Length: 122
Image 1 (cartoon, rainbow, N blue to C red):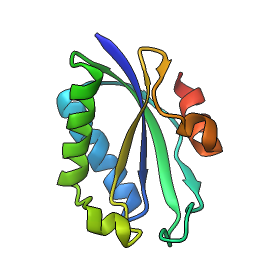
Image 2 (cartoon, rainbow, N blue to C red; image 1 turned 90 degrees about the vertical axis):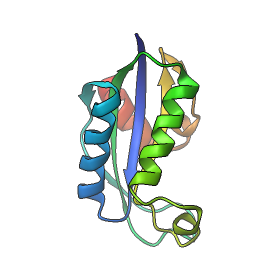
Image 3 (cartoon, helix red, strand yellow; image 1 turned 60 degrees about the vertical axis):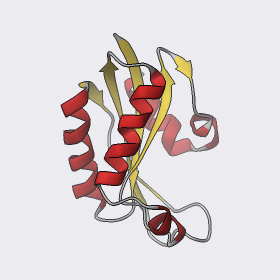
Image 4 (tube, rainbow, N blue to C red; image 1 turned 135 degrees about the horizontal axis):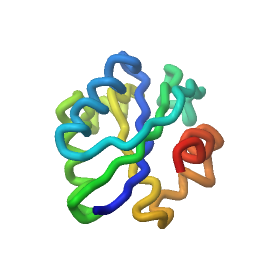
């Protein structure tokens, strides 16, 4: 079993979409734990609304690439499209940060809120 630490973020119906995302993730993976909920200011001019963020640790029998494909499908199911991203609306963002204790996404080092959430459950 592979261990993944995942960052979830939303700036559109964020509390609802974070819960739905975790429910959908639990259909595919065993959710081990989750971090506290952190609200962060948007980064970049296209995002107008604050982001709500959480990190989850999950177990996956799939490869990292297969796991990311499932994440992308969940994002699509929750209404994320290239057009919504261009408009600064992010129903859900699911990023793989650590895979079996190996750093996959440098957002961990770029954003304090990511590091805070991930370190809480690492």
